[in-house]
Amino acid sequence: MAHSILLTLVVFLLVYASMNARVKQITRARSRAYQEVSSPLSEAIKDFVAVAGGVYLGLMALSEFLKVPVPIEAEVWGLSFDPIAVVAVLLAIVAPMFPARQRY
Image (cartoon, rainbow, N blue to C red; front, side, top):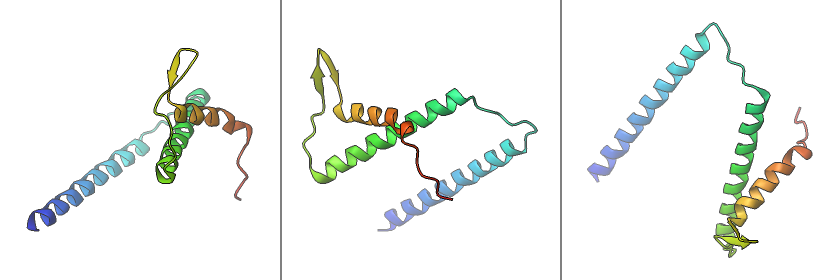
């Protein structure tokens, strides 16, 4: 019992130290005189990967929760692939064509 309490306390202290270090790094980065500007292409790639990854994780969680039997690997025309990953990438490709409503 004492070991688990001690381990929990150590984990909380490590998380606190990590957050403190991150805040200091962010503060130092913001205090610099110049602002780094990312290109539109890099922003688009980052957005695409984020959407595809989020959709993939959501579909995996949904299929596990509903106990839907999804094949781990499928093969079409000699190409092996993960069907859930293909669906996630296709949805990420289609996502910009259906913009989200403004919340303001």
